[in-house]
Amino acid sequence: MHFIDPHADLWRPAPDEAAPRPAAGLLLRHDQWRAVRAGWPAEVPVGVTWPNDADIAELVDDLPRLELIALTFPKWTDGRAYSQARLLRGRWRWRGQIRAVGDVIPDMAPLLWRSGFDTAVLRPGESTAVAQQALQAFDGHYQPDTRRTRTAPERAHG
Image (tube, rainbow, N blue to C red; front, top):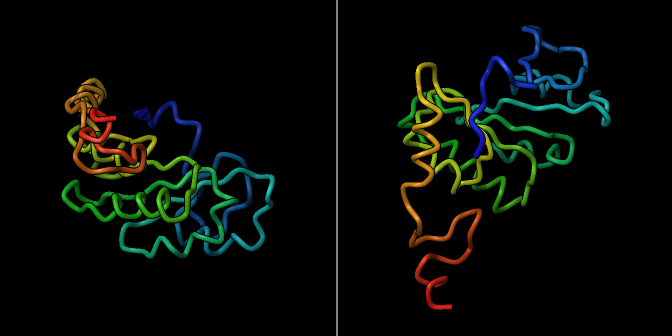
């Protein structure tokens, strides 16, 4: 899992307008994407920030056009974005980048990884080193996830 430094990120938020003009590397809000998706050129890479209270199934037809989906955690205790990531990876087999944004803390790193996130932007003041350590806290799990379909006991017994 990669932790993004917002100051060095290749993706930049779209200008605060209803229908931004197409440009590579823009990260559009969900309402902006809805406004421009019909006219967005296929050759222009695009990302979208999706709220955790919006139906992720709305994006299914757009998945081949998206390179990045940033899923929002308004509070670290609100886990709906985990379910959205799981649906993207499991049900629709989407292979683009899934990013956690919002109130993201290091303790969330293992579950972010297991549910399908590739990247995360930690909330200000949080430590990337602590988040990396959190990823190493467990060497096996009793439930399958988006990365491993066999549990730790199943792998141990062949």
